[in-house]
Amino acid sequence: MGRGPNLVKPLEITFTVNEQTGWYLDRLIEMGVYGNTRPEAARTALYDHCKLLVAQEKMKMAPAVEGSAAVRVAGS
Image 1 (tube, one colour):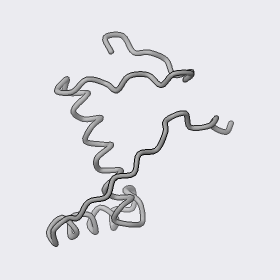
Image 2: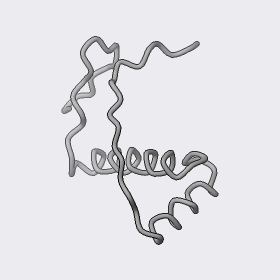
Image 3: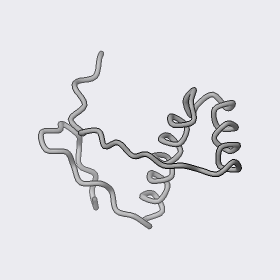
Image 4: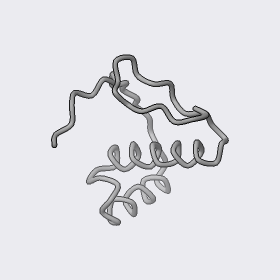
């Protein structure tokens, strides 16, 4: 079953990292689950870290998207 349209509007963010951070991004790419490019690896790592902070209750979950069929989780 295919997914419906993405209701979350994209937000472009551009930034520069140092060589060490580039090295870490390259290691994430080599792992094969973080994407095939540095921007993909950075986006996936940031998203995963946000999920970790939510799970640790150090950050609140993002508000639901208007019109989304997503199920609300108790306490969020």
